[in-house]
Length: 404
Image 1 (tube, rainbow, N blue to C red):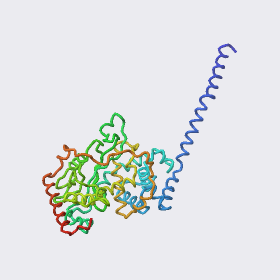
Image 2: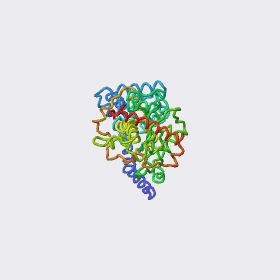
Image 3: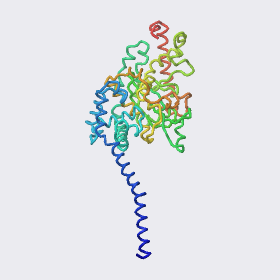
Image 4: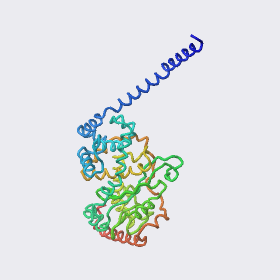
């Protein structure tokens, strides 16, 4: 054998050794990883059975996982299927709904959902996005006024409020909800607390149903600016009717605000404190009592869905739909007489250490935004004075002096 042949044999031997010590281990690792990856998500049946266990097991398990009772969950799944909003595939509507509600209830990442339901991250991304896409449609169907033309029993049956507020159809308030943005895009979303949020507008009736919601305004926007935007996009107040608002909105005949610089918050009229001393204090007290419905609503929403208190991992166009999603499910739960008392003793299913510090409302009136509100501020002030004086005269006469 000549030297060239010997060299070729030696070179081939070296190549074989390289294959054995480099290529084969890499191939083994790839096959092993692929096998483990497949095994992690092979439990297609597990996810379906897990959802079935949560719906058919102890009531508290379903409430903790999905924030609603099993019968309401099943009604909602049927509605989505019958309306063609969410369709069955290899994964049924019930399981897809479970994914979205679990994400919303726990701010669960796709990784955490893989551990809970044993599907791939791709599946959760696909089906959660599918739900986000129908939120605008569900909002127009579920979040709307039920009756704008009859005096609500909450007012009609209470001498503190009738006839003074007989044309009131609900209350409005802004609520900041955290968002996450890259540093280069964070500035407009920074609120006066220095955190990042969207300023969402909620309206509610006296049954604590959300009747309108506007999402997506940056945290730097004032409440009055968000209301102006909602009006430009179709939010209306029927002629002769009005909503109760706080002082940050200004005062018109459509949006009745309390007197500024006068006692207003209920704690200021608490036990041991003096009773209303004039027509403005009396008006502010009863305005606060009646407007408390919006504060109660927001409290229930954030207790049921504490995702409204934390930043999330979703794209911004889906982040801004989270408050609307919470409002939709809240209304459905109330329409089906879902329980809310259990929330009082329920621990937060999102770590409170992750809650974002957020503003409560506008500290000062943003005049440039308030003056653009529809209606006339003089007419608003006249209406407020008329209500307040009639209320005060009846109060002084003893007609309802003991019903505070």
